[in-house]
Image (cartoon, rainbow, N blue to C red; front, side, top):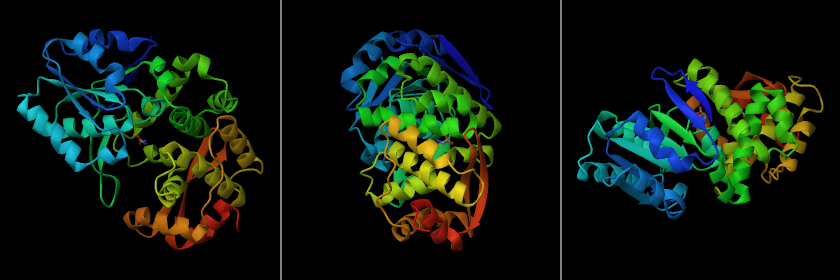
Amino acid sequence: MKRIRVKAARPYDVYIRRGMLNDAHTMIRALKKDARCMVVTDSNVAPLYLDALADSLGADTGSFIFPAGEQSKTLATFGNILEHMAASGFTRADLVVALGGGVVGDTAGFASACYLRGIDYVQIPTTFLSAIDSSVGGKTAIDLAAGKNLAGAFLQPSLVLIDPDVFQTLPAPVFNEGTAEALKHGVLYDSALFETLATGDFKKDMESVVYRNVELKAAVVQKDERDTGERRMLNLGHTFGHAVEACSGFSLYHGEGVAIGMLMAARISERLGVASPGLSDTIRQALLQNHLPTDCAFDAEALCRAARIDKKRMGDTLTLILIKRIGECVPYDIPVSDLLSVMKMAVGTA
Ligand code: GLY
């Protein structure tokens, strides 16, 4: 078993081990022996893992299941979880267990942050993407009509349990979203990780891949828990990626948007002389090798209109994350008025 201590203001452990879901109850009981637990999960995950986990946690374990998908990450679901906790007489001595991907973790985490002004929660991520990203770092949120993740709170989990075996049941495009975020960690901080992933042949040792990614994420969270500095580097590929996702009417997965967005960032980095020629080819090959999309089907004007939703919250300057070389990135401020010309570089029409 691998362990990473996240030294946030309130420190906690992330454990990674194949097969760990079978004895997650032991780890949870070691954390909070007598707590009543409520497992929050979704309609995809519940039939696979809920009964075994709830039974092992004890007879008075409750559960809350909501329909799988981003469309459930709403005020309504959040409110229903809170009402369910209140009706069950949950107290601050009790514990929420978020069992699922990012939507479950973010929504259950936000309910935990708000119920009684904050109760403890455990993250058991069931997707590669949530294991290496959203389950670690304490960002919790739901979507509003105006956009994704617009209401939320920072609350670090008390424990994160990652069983890479559960990724085996993921549809390929959902697994590949995790690979996009893992490649992003490699591009940001670790060229050896990038090279391992770029082969597309890394699935035989998922424990090690998850470990290295969580280690990198934890290091960033420790430096900047509240997302005011270094943590913003994790936005590599996201400004462009969100615009691509929005233009696709969210038919592209988030990780697919990040893949395309990272390649766009690479093209701009080359054009602005931040990176040497060849960088975008290297990234493109790594994405293709992992069955991730590389082509942006939208023109610069449409992408700009989509990106302007983010821009409003940033004043007159937009901070892009550009790539110097694999393993080293830099923040790069542009005036918002330059967004269209930069977007043209990103899609290769300037
Ligand atoms: N997903 C980016 C972050 O946790 O900051």
